[in-house]
Amino acid sequence: MGDYSIVVKGLTKKYGKKHALRGIDVSLHKDEIIGLVGANGSGKTTFFNICSGLDSPSEGEVSVLGMNPRTDVEASEMIVYSNMRLPVGGTNRVVDVLRYYEIMYDNFDIKFAMKLVRMFDLSEFTKVDKLSTGMRSILHVICGIAARCEITIFDEPINGIDVSKRKMINKIIMGDYIEHQRTIFITTHILSEIDNLVSEIMLINEGGLVFYKGIDEVREMMFRADGDKEQLDSVFDEKDYCFRQDGEMSSFVIGYGSPNGKLANDARNKGIKISSVSPEEACYYSINIGDNKEVETLWD
Image 1: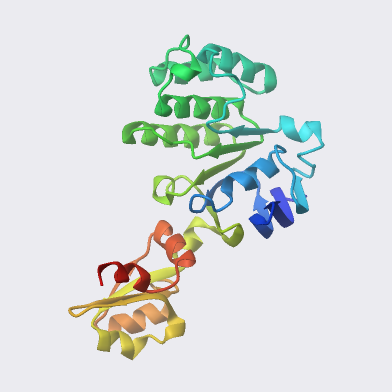
Image 2: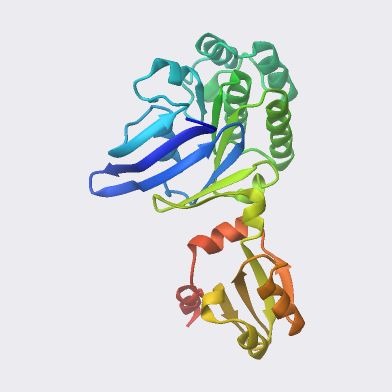
């Protein structure tokens, strides 16, 4: 197994004739905070349903910590999958949910969980079905982080949570990761919310793997070059960029490579303005190749 938490080979999931996952091959590192990024419907939840043993692949192999998550009981005890579908009925109180997790997971820290409940002003005697969407999200984050499993999966953990509490949650996840190192996965379609938290990114689109890279490597994938059309034509061939937009006053391209690389420096020397592309933008341009002509036709 080596230093990998999850290894999948040819992972495919079909629902009838529709593919949710398409032949994914990837080995995900241990003891990292990994963001699984993709648009809604890209296959993020399906991927982790299979990796946590809640579903079976149509084709391919899945190994979690060297075990089959579907058949190996020991594997299921090492994984906590935290999402809005809590494994306890909505009529149960918050404290009942915490006690359930304490029974299910040997490492669950009930004292730490209660500290978080009070920190977020979450009444322990309120029934789950009476909680707002944001408070329910906070509860599933608390359950996931306090379980301290070797593999912790958060599926869209900040859904419905206000900005100040989102920042607090990110600090708590990072702080507890430092104190109790393990592999943490966070699924999201808004990478900017977590790009300072994750160390690696796995991008999927329409059920297929686009890339799996370290966050610093993603920051070096692309750059933006702004100038007039003639300036850009003097530096960039079509193979040098994934996106271009020409305007009457100015134009820009999203070029391949580092903002400090040779191509970017050649552009600078031509008077072209070079700027960095965020990890979220790099993911966007990796799966949205084109020039938005279809969008522009809306106003024709």
